[in-house]
Image 1 (tube, rainbow, N blue to C red):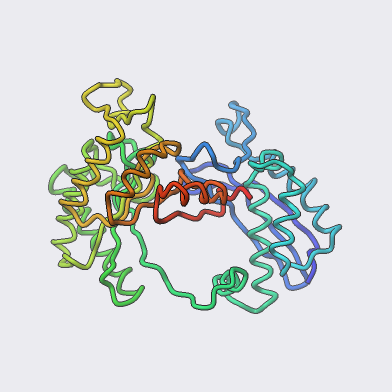
Image 2: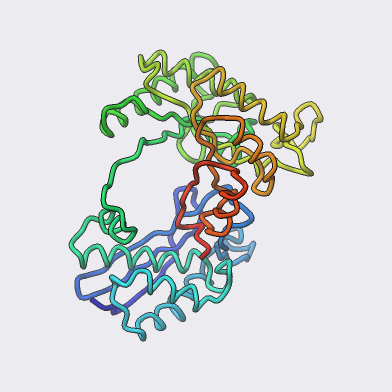
Length: 350
């Protein structure tokens, strides 16, 4: 089943920012993809191409990336007469056509939009659900649903409060199945709203960029206390663990970490070293059921990553550290910097 037409357009994401939607047409119909983007990004990520015209959509327009799809990528792919099931070959062709390590010529968002649409079409051609088709492409025989991570308190770049750390999540590890995990997660979320309302007032129950509550607190321990109490009130003590996405690169400067970076004051009382930040995390692990910490240190602070990894037995996740880049992942493995990584197709470099 070959590609008849590819067309990209500009749409808006959940934050009201422009992004790319791609339609790919075959004899079986039209297959559509929408490209995700994040609020906080790592410096080593593939380039998300934006227009840069501050007078239009704050410079975040994606007309250049769209033109790259419609005027260059689409005709080149169609001319090659690829079959939609040739996912690897199509992806490699687009990467080579771009010719840059960071996908800066076409934009990672342009390439990804086409790649995702191809994947949708390939699944339809094979008559498989998308998840099963992706598993087949990856050579994965056994597919299981993961434990969902509910982002229930937002800070960092995801909220307008004082909280430096970006995401506080609950993980229903004691659930019997995914359905029960969803029930546990949603029940705790609503209990959390009531706990926040009781402690800080109704106006503190506003939500951040990703749907988690964003009370105007500064201390991460306050956030953890709120979550711990909500788990207890819901009756799920022991069944639910806590995960953090610190996004520490957002508040790293001159080799130190500013836990009050949103104020812009650079108060020495709130600026700490990497080892001091590691001690903060160890206290979290000791006092709360914290089992996962993502982006605990700056994306290039390899020494503190490695030292912390050697001293703990929880899940230490690299996201901005590894940016779904095989070279960065290999480097992290060699340095024993983390024991887990986040995979995002929007960050894929190679």
